[in-house]
Length: 577
Image (cartoon, rainbow, N blue to C red; front, side, top):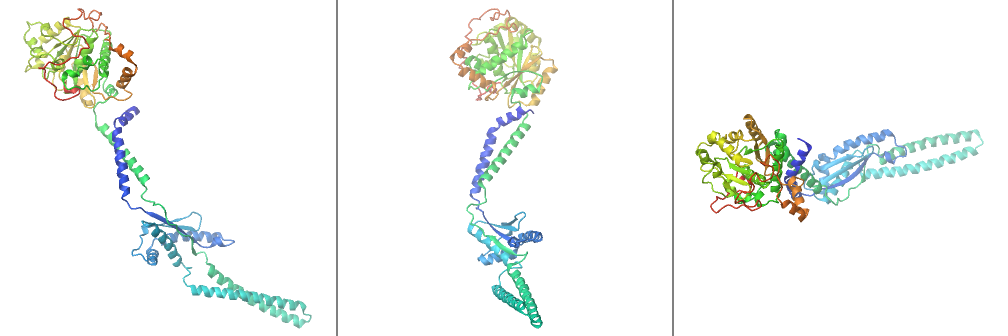
């Protein structure tokens, strides 16, 4: 597949993608409305007190960071969570799954986060878990009496240190004033004793001070939690966007899967790549309750569908620019693909160009041309084959379209293929070629019965009608192979019921005819010439003998008589095949 093919699939299935995105988005939004809102509160503790020291060592900082990893696991365990629940008076123990921690990289800080449906309870739990962690650490401060005693001892030692330092200074002054050897020796002995006592006081003071300040394995609450003002879950916008993305992905996957499994032809490009046969034209769906209403080339000559048949007529004309085209047949791979409507409109378009055309209903099983043109089917081709003494022109029925005659089937025979392949059929074709410039045959589906293959050997070419979106690729290949097997000349494909879309042929034609003003409409309302000698006997546009008697103008609408059977309720070209 080419890039354009992928884009075509996206444009074809855009409605499915939009629907899936809308359904997924609305469903996810409604679902999130019923979900409980989750709030998160975060408190921060600090491991160790190296940051409070003037000259902290790298070893203290490294040990604190390692201890933080241990404490981050402790907060999720039952002793901490149970202690927090008891302290807050909760009737349940918080789940460890609702508690998370984060060690701030290269620091001694540890964040403790708690998620809960109540924002106040989330804050209280975060603060209490931090408190429980401090209480259960080696340096907790639960024994206040012991702390008070240590503080008193520190104060006493501080006073003793100062008093001893004063005594040392006094003895030193006496030593400086002494002038006898005995006095000097006595003062020196006193100073030495005081220095020893001072050192003892200072050592005790330092030891008690370390107890109060803590060491490396020391926890303090650095920042308490705040009451969260908005929930962290569910994230409505993120959830809706994710659901929309999933819906879009599933729709795209489904569309491409459908296209992969669907082997029907939908566009002229696909049809052109399928077989080495040109695509002569693309026709939009033809609407109409009665078969005669679908003869759009005569009823609505300025419609886009009529222009499509004129394009097909031109393509056929130039396909035989070097030699004369006297006859061709129209068939399809299967039934209800619109071949009969296609033939009727194409024959009308060629007749409007000035060529004398005879449309022959060669579908001796399900004839429909008499319904389209609104003529009687009491006698026709079958009677002509069975009565060699009769002249072919006597069975031709003048239609409401100028230069167009119709040879209906007449009573249906039990052996259609034998009649179409008889010598008498060949004689009829030769006789009618003397009467008209072009013979066009409506034949049954080529893969259903052999009638179309039989007729294809007697005409100059065959046009295969393909129903867009219904005819499968395998059937198209089979019908082309079947026609080539009998050495029939496949002129090309006519793609029927093509969807109209912006940028395509029909859109451009509509814009040209409806936006370019009345001048273009008047110009195109005139009958376009079809003067190539391949469809005209003498090149004068009159088919050799001018207008026939009783012929109606080409633009006159065709209506079925009261006795003509009505259609079967379908509104496209395939309703009458």
